[in-house]
Length: 347
Image (cartoon, rainbow, N blue to C red; front, side, top):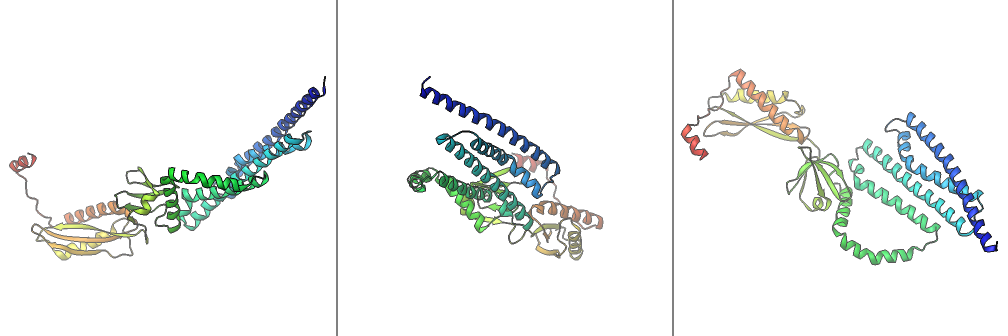
């Protein structure tokens, strides 16, 4: 057997030995990982640091096991030259990638809990989480480039040349992304706000993503609105400066109704209506007053949220109508519709 054949056999033997060592190390480390995560799942409670750590370490811990197994293999196996360099580079890559994953998940979860406790609703939006992930990913990519001694200049040059073509192809997507950043910085709306666009879309903001903003309508449907449309449209935010707002209900009576009693009854019933703010005294106006067919009043109340307006108006109308019936307040007469006129209207 010549020397070249022996060299090939020696290399195969070295790789076989390295494979066995790697398999043993991976089996041991993955078993320890399984037992540790299982123990953590039993003792952790939701929304606690241990719970956050448990969910953040599930995927990165597997990469740590692979990195540790490669390091063990490199230390005890007879690997030299390119093989040793490849194993060391793979171990470092697994370590950096896992650190990026766990760091981004931990930062996002801690950021979300802190923002929720301080009432910073914009901080839990999708675009804020995307910015955190991209920033940590850039740090990890820089560490890998420095480890493998790859010059950043050619990469930046290639990105500069191809960046123009990519920017033109993804013009709308990039415009919506930067519009999402603009929404985060200027904060014209937050998650949970009730908004209306000049184009007619309205609802509660459920998420601000990197490309679209999700709005939940009253019919429990979600409208996906491009971020650029929000920043370029006339936007009404009913949560600014706060959620409370005034609403009114029209009251109709006959000409011979006692105006003073009507005003008193309307004010009393308004105070007793559910979801009406107690710190705002209801206002009853004789508006528009005398009409050709009836007397008309307007009662104005204040509520905590615009989404309560329909229910408050319905409850207040019902309470006033029932009170009028009990106290004999006359309602406007309803002229009967003749069959001839009804048939004419149908035709």
